[in-house]
Amino acid sequence: MSKLVKGLVAAAMVATSMAAVADDKPVVAVTEFSNQSGAGWWRGGVGYELADMLTNELAATRAFRVVERDQLRAVLDEQNLAASGRIAPGDGAQIGQLTGAQYLVTGIVSSYEEQTSSTGGGISFGGVSVGGKSSKAYLAIDLRVIDTTTGEVAFTRTVEGTSKSGGMSLGVRRGGFGGSLASEKNTPAGKAIRATLIEATDYLECVMVTQSRRCMNKYDARDDRRRDRTREAIDLD
Image 1 (cartoon, rainbow, N blue to C red):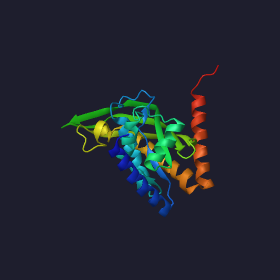
Image 2 (image 1 turned 180 degrees about the vertical axis):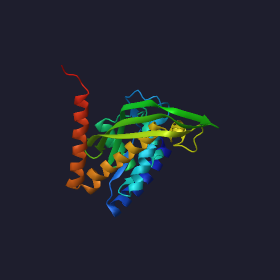
Image 3 (image 1 turned 90 degrees about the vertical axis):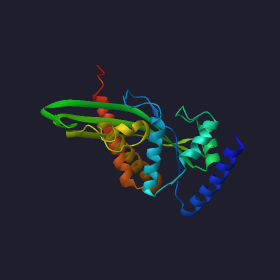
């Protein structure tokens, strides 16, 4: 590791550790997402962007202290781990030691489905379409939280998000997520992404911070329903 990276990481680690002791919030870092789905919107850079978005959502809960993504990326790049999206237990402990993160959060896009159906009667003028189609999307992300002290997987869960749209769509979208996902802000895919990331932060806050039996039971029930749907979709005969 270069001296510059070592210096920056050491300084950030000390500051993060002191802050964590002061407010007793879990210190987390989010690694680059990987993809095991056939999502058409997945392209170069999306794994980093999803990690950035989840990092921002975790920070917005005010329940965590979050390691800066640039700091984490510097360490991962030095160790040639950034592109894999998978952190081995030993690597997790080492990265945690270098960045001050108590936990590493990894994400794999494991499923994406999108369906568009015609509703009839659509008209178009000036780049604006009204009616004519309805779209929905489903996204699932497999989360793993690695305890950097022990190197063990502390929490794991598949979180899901769905979205629906129809009636009006703008030919030119304003704003966006930025980067490779900039064109997806107002699409079913973009809405499903945002819904899934918020669901992920709610789950992580539940199991890592709140730790109430009520919210844990809620997520256990959701996971049971997801598994039941998966079983029903498989023909075992």
